Image 1 (tube, rainbow, N blue to C red):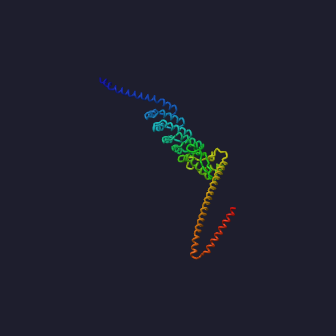
Image 2 (tube, rainbow, N blue to C red):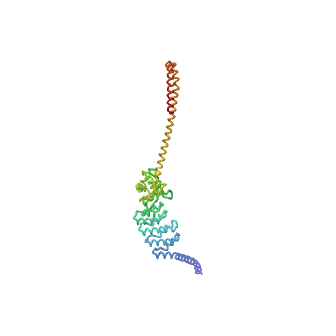
Image 3 (cartoon, rainbow, N blue to C red):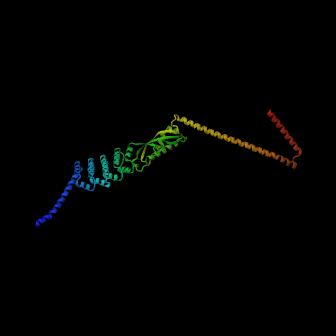
Length: 380
């Protein structure tokens, strides 16, 4: 009876233990079955990942298939020192599979190109908001073209918002910038020579990227503005428009020698005058004849204006002389009016007698007779 009671007391403990053991076995079996495919895939590919690591990924909510696949990709590319912990750390920052893919892809490309770039460098740049693959591709292109480009400079250019791949391509293959651009302004530059003739000019600027100035340097808009200013200034200093039409390369050489690419992200290779014409006469065959005709017509109008001015001055002078004559006549009339007064004063003072008066009268009569006879002869 005692043994029977002991057996009844031990029976539940054994059952509980068997149940717990069965649960553990079932749990292990299901875990084994859920990870067996990934485990076998990693083992066959040579990128061995232990069961404990897979279980830890499951507990940390990290997709094991992502980590294993990326590790296999790195291993096939020759990177056998990339642990799963680093891959997990990339995923756990933002819970994004794309972060892991971008970092591993950039590392694989850099390793195949022989660039000394670490996974930590790419990870830091990616989380700083940069484009890892663009930086690696640009550095590969610069390395092939023997262009000095360090990782720090490439990351700084990318984080500054510049297209690092386009910058390297422009360094190898210069690009052409129209001056002025037709997007935000007129299609031609408008400049005036010293002789007053307006010229319409369009230039093409060939530039290549200046890697060292790409972060702090000015952009294309500054190049266009400086070249336009230089062309307008060079034409404005020309004596005549004919000099510009005869030697347009002189304008481009003068502008090119001004150092317009200072503190910019580009180096100016050449400035070429693509089109040049005189304003408002682009459809005229003989531009020189038309300009000479217009100049002659302008000179004619100027001379006519000068002649009319001189005629007006002459007419004004004539009127002034007539007024002066009338003024002098008035003075004579006033003087004659004083003669009787003077004679009266002479009579009173005894300086003139009656005979003197009659003699003066006779002289006046003779004078009037002679004047009348002279007028009759002139009329005949």
